[in-house]
Image (tube, rainbow, N blue to C red):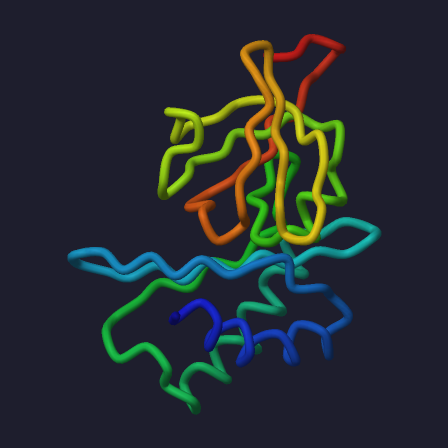
Length: 154
């Protein structure tokens, strides 16, 4: 998968700059491919941080040339409504609200909104008012935190 190769390429550069790599999205489109790189830091991520990482990643990608077509590089923080890329990230947010899109339905559902209840050996459980849904990470197409503000959950 392209994301795995790109992750292996950019991770050392990002870590050398003092940031953590949260995740990589490779989104091929008709006219322009988008390469979105999410960086994180315990003290937050600013615009200058993104620009610095973008500059270094661009240089690396020019040399390595892993994307043969035209593309747009976007570097940003994961934000409050961050995309979750792996089971370890789900585990960091147990008790938080999430929206998950699955490749294969679980109990008739492919789009699940609920609270991350448990993560155990790659098995993730998201619970809502209907039921608890258990699924493997490899069934997740996209997952995003849904932060609540002012105590109101949506």
